[in-house]
Image 1 (cartoon, rainbow, N blue to C red):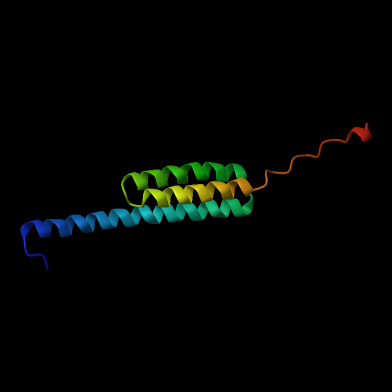
Image 2: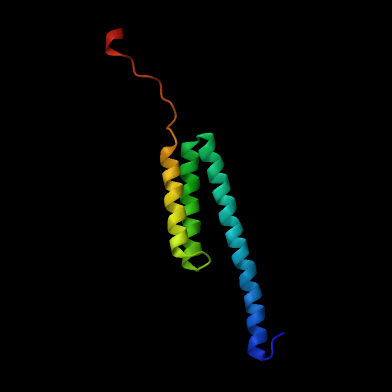
Length: 100
């Protein structure tokens, strides 16, 4: 129970910030989950677009200190590496010179 007027205000302020922070963290987790599903399915172009959105969201969260900057950087790095491992869509094989 807060003892002073300023403590009462801080309790209310803290509660508002908590709700906002939880919403942002939840959105980050949802974006990461959908990105991982795209990577697992091998949809590289869609995953690339999703990665750009995810990186932007992590940068904004780090800027407002919802997640630590190092945490955001580490996650962005790992997610980017994961996308690089996805094989590009198989193109039609090039005709061999012996066939012509």
